[in-house]
Image (cartoon, rainbow, N blue to C red; front, side):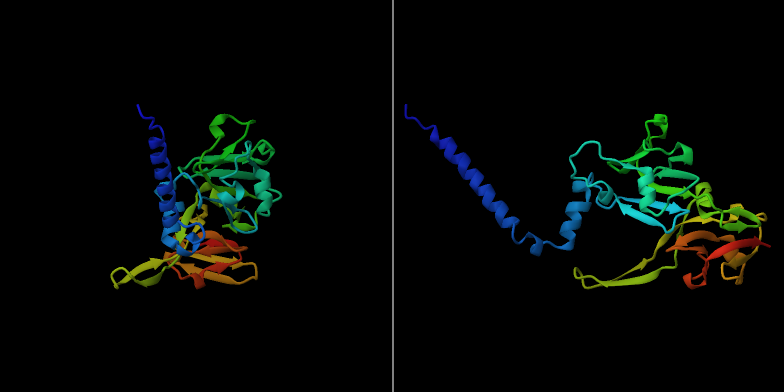
Length: 277
């Protein structure tokens, strides 16, 4: 019998060479960045094909903080980091956000889970870990029921109470701990002429801000008028609709009283006191 062992080997080598040439033609290494479109990258890195890579997962630090801060999870925990034991202490995250002292800190997950810790119970064992849905909280000193998955918001309650509502001292962190809502700003139209069918498409683009509803903190919940005092001593009055939908939020480093019933330029900055009438 003729020895033909080399025939399958030659066929295998030919297949490998063909696959290699095809891959080089489709994704040439030196030209891939120049040839890729925005859609290519979004599809590759953000779509269902790679859903377990949390490129845009965010962790927000809110409440009694110098300013609202968010972190991309990949900046905290690079997902390609193969090292074991990757973690970040909760106190280090707060220091990065400008918070040195606090009374309480709360962690809230995407599915509504909430864990609240008083300051004495936040230790070096209170850590954040990389997780499929962004971040997980773990603390070996606490029961496993507090090991929250999918943490998205960290709400800080400070030692000070720089705001009074109907004479009662409070703060944005205390208010957000009771209830947090998203305020949607008045939107602007976005127009786009599509290159696919040459038609003009319309949408509304706006911003949503995490905020604390005011109504539950008023001595008169049915009040139809608010008298607002700013740090500069100015007094402003809001009537019915604006008063009913008023919320407090932080924008940059200022505390604002805002309402979806009013345009942004009418929101009141540097609020220190609110009285219902």
